[in-house]
Image (tube, rainbow, N blue to C red):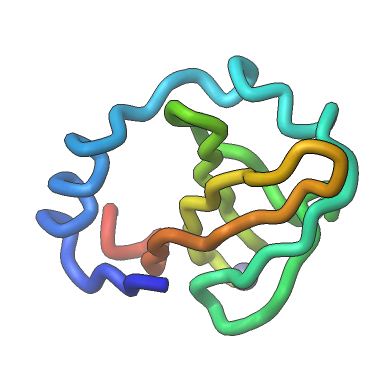
Length: 95
Ligand SMILES: [Zn+2]
């Protein structure tokens, strides 16, 4: 996973994959999917501490965890879903 360290790096990434409303992805409909978070832990998409801040095409979600890190995951697979973590950053760099 790529870790972004500056606001400009995050903005450039979001230009490549423009963010859309979180509800467009219906992440909860995918059930439990574990993902590697930018904070270094492994979380589950259905964990109540995980909030989806946006979606992107195709099947990408920007997730925020309780440690205040954001991770962009891509959901792959048909019967068995898995999440590929593409990049992440500490949410506070966007302040
Ligand atoms: Zn995390």
